[in-house]
Length: 116
Image (tube, rainbow, N blue to C red; front, top):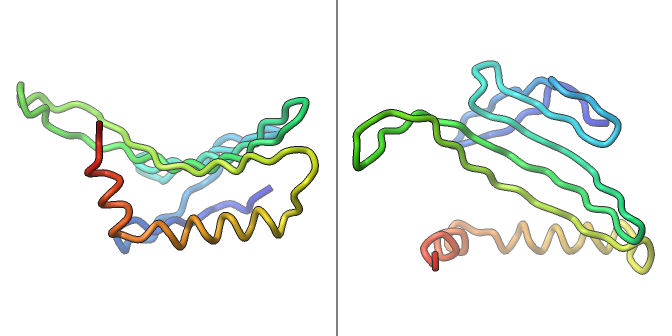
């Protein structure tokens, strides 16, 4: 289990997130103002385990067509999907490091601009 609070830095601002849900295979951490939420969970099936880390942010934004304010949320998450055998933690750690390294601002910008 992860300690509470967890800290995330968004746009150079560090925010503490306190655990509000603590279940056997899932935890949820939320900022004091409720705008940031971190979910950590594990799902086991017969042949695999999936580990999820998800960060969601909620904002109030004006609809460009109606100018009405509404809550909007966005999420960014990583899933590590591992079989029961064939990989050790170091293999998955190396893959995660490679993906994190690849996620440069330039590659994220290219990813976000290539909507279909």
